[in-house]
Amino acid sequence: MLEVRGLHVSYGEIRALKGVSFQVNEGEVVALLGNNGAGKTTTLRAISGLLAPRAGDVIFEGGSLVGVASHLIVRRGVTHVPEGGASSIA
Image 1 (cartoon, rainbow, N blue to C red):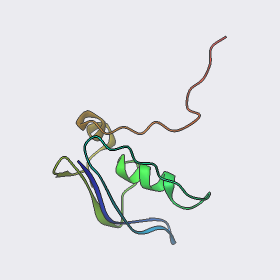
Image 2 (cartoon, one colour):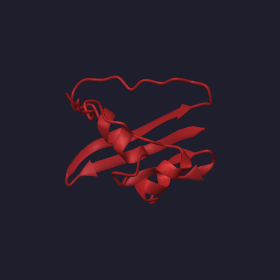
Image 3 (cartoon, helix red, strand yellow):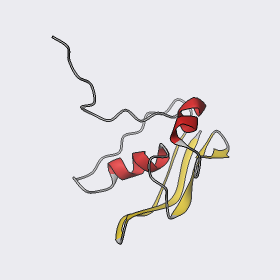
């Protein structure tokens, strides 16, 4: 269903992801765990189309998401909801 293949992402000269690969099959629940600065958010931003990878691919339901605008990725069914984004109304 979702496959990340050899993903490389950089912020300028800083290489944040170096060959990240994993697969999530239908019905599975997967968690990305790691220390601060390990690349969890960068991975999610690349999957969501918010960051362009330097190399690698993100495949969802057989089609590549690399180079697809983030709003079109959402229409395909992939969303990214950052923690702490909700606000309360009193």
